[in-house]
Length: 372
Image (cartoon, rainbow, N blue to C red; front, side, top):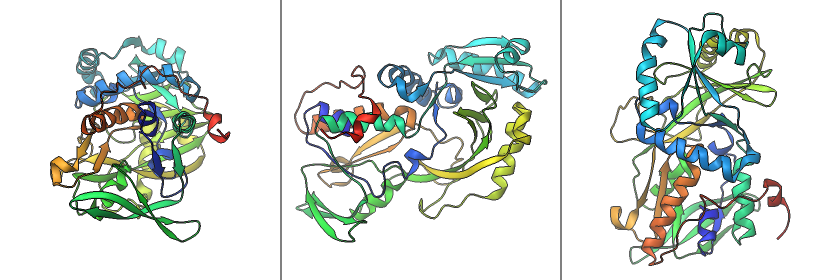
């Protein structure tokens, strides 16, 4: 958001409750989605992912390992899913290449000998910290100001309009006020809590998931199970580690989430069905992070909740001027989420300024640590 808005000439300040990437941003598994995972049951999210996949490869190549991925079939149920999967990927514009079992194991020798076939798709691996640093570095160079350990604890209103925020500084333990013309709530799974400070309810619920990192780079490509997207069905190489994931459930408070130990054994078992070496690998770390899921109704199956995103103009939705919320989405679609919200901001402020983030190559991430 800061990158897009500074390119359009806005003055931008970003307030982060903790250290950068201390929320979900720095805790996801690092998959640059091709969209194939969602093609069958969530084609909107699938198309968003493949479009943004191509853009991020152009504007931030240093943050990516462009290693592709395989969806592998290991039993008859997986084989039955093949036709629907291929048709859905093609209809979403996702390139697919079918591989025999022998071809797949030539690419990835660690695959189970039981592999029946595989489908190659343009997944990739992203560095969960380095990618956002590219955006921060470019936004900083264009004048954005950043405030870490600065938590919004109150909204100030006048005549139905948000005019400022009260900030609690976690370093000094003091408080101060910040005025502004427009406030964007882009706090991920914490966005509902922020809106509650303004008396607004968002259709959002945190959807945590467990990830396990094991020692050893067991594959060089991203490995997915060729079946309906579920839990514990993906292996992502990250430097000298392999990140296995993930599970999902619905929670209320993103700050009190603890991972269920049984999820770890489930992940190890099911990922081991695709790559047997997983079962012998030593665990380096286990963690969980909350997804910011847009929940349309109660008791939804968290696996079937769309991974798309939306932005809410609270003047139109709730009669509160000066506040916009951005929720949903994935790390892969971060740029598109900002574009849609910045377009709304331009519309609301009477500006016709086109988005430039699709083509503007980002600065080196190291530039963030150099003074302007």
